[in-house]
Image (cartoon, rainbow, N blue to C red; front, side, top):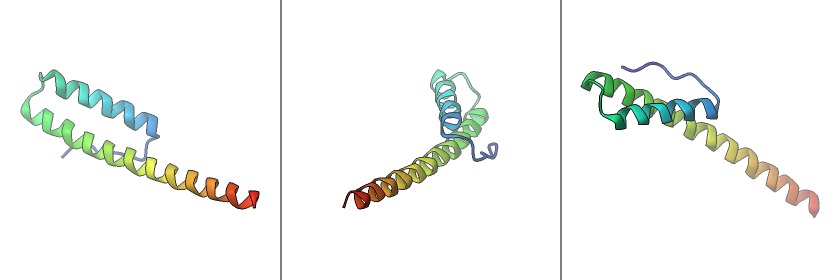
Length: 71
């Protein structure tokens, strides 16, 4: 299985994911290496999605708080 993805920053995870996509698109990896890279990419994608979801919740709460203050 691929390497374990830690809770990196969004930017770090996205950068790693872009690098993986680039290497997979080049097509010069062995099959086993491609599968490992793909697994890593899936983990990074999930991490990015989780981080974005957390930020979206924060922005929604802040926006709601702002609207309540205006009343």
